[in-house]
Image (cartoon, rainbow, N blue to C red; front, side):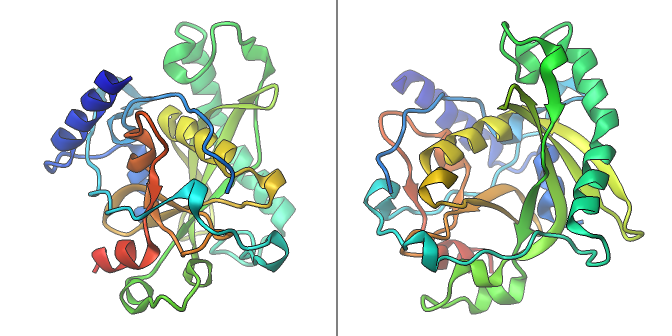
Length: 271
């Protein structure tokens, strides 16, 4: 496991040298004890579905961590607040919007299924999965934070109070309820939804985050993007101190769970 972690760290050093990024960068605009997780490859190295042989590495630098998640104080779920379902287009009813986003993902879903029929594991599926059981789930909204809010953020603020809809979603592809991959969907200036690429690695990282801070225990982790920075960050609003962590921190885990990064440090590094 330590050998693999060193390999991941080496990949990080290479990818942070300024090369391109995977489909996750499209979102940049246009607690209980940690559960063991599956070590996976870099999300910024993920192959584009339309060109499986080409990786586009680039990641933002992880922030310095201070407090491990298991030791972080927890706000009682009843006191936690959540923003409304993300959408830059308020005209659509939430149910209609969900269906429209899912429908936009269908062509890419069919594409994923065609490829997975020949190589299941490369597209996030288990060998024993029956691909006929695969289906699209409810879209996961990606939030963003304005440069002004990032610059002016203070320790007295809640990260959740500055989260804004980004106009991007990740639509889960599941098999009997188990997440296998994500399909990205974006809303254009005409309020039309368009599918992007598939992201197996982001799905695997999200499974780790969701299992470590599960909804049934009152946690509601959120994915966040920032204009100009490839990839995703995540925040657990119910935890104190306020946190905002590069998902690369989770990927680089070896013998113990990654620390959560203080939101103030992360946001001010974006200036």
